[in-house]
Image (cartoon, rainbow, N blue to C red; front, side, top):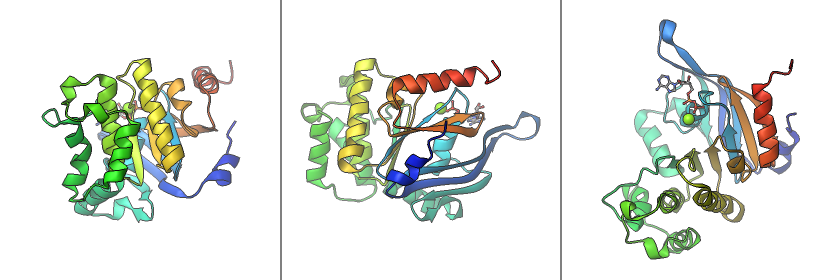
Length: 256
Ligand SMILES: Nc1ncnc2c1ncn2[C@@H]1O[C@H](COP(=O)(O)OP(=O)(O)O)[C@@H](O)[C@H]1O
Ligand SMILES: [Mg+2]
């Protein structure tokens, strides 16, 4: 069942919006329609999960909403800016100044220390770090005594916490995380998810996270379910059990 009542009830506003987004890879007979007229609102100050089977279009939806993929048709909004109307340079600016990213593979710069990695996006944008804020992030992520370490001197969980701190340091309007716990064991996953959840609850950060793990989705406020390039359902205040039930239902058609 779709629990649409939740959206209007709690939403402070819309941080990002996809409107009838269609995205095809390739041409002719080998063309794959990864997204078929997908519309979705990402609520401000909320933790949203995107779930669905492998190949259902989760990453493509996230990349399209973040202006990393060029879409065939439809609109993508970040706040009040429509991305498809922007020139490449303006798009780069939006990504740099307004968005944060966390990837499954951490994507840290190996030659830089943890602290330098955390501050790098701000340095690239030519912005001065808000030291009190950066200190708070470093303490919350438990990285205080790891700041001078390079990525290869850190565990996977620590590296991903550095990536989270890096994404949060600039206080982006929205953070896009694509399977951020995909390479982590369950303890490290839990640490990263708890941290992301706190940044939403305590600091009003907006986060969208692709995941295929019900236990990860349970940390979020709302789940969008994708199947074959379409949003087929959503769930408010998910629990791991309810998400698992819902995913099982996809694999078993209603006729069964
Ligand atoms: N760069 C690409 N070139 C061709 N096909 C792609 C590309 N990226 C994704 N696809 C196809 O688009 C569909 C959706 O992929 P993706 O968004 O990565 O799914 P998910 O993240 O849910 O696993 C899949 O059929 C995939 O093979
Ligand atoms: Mg993916």
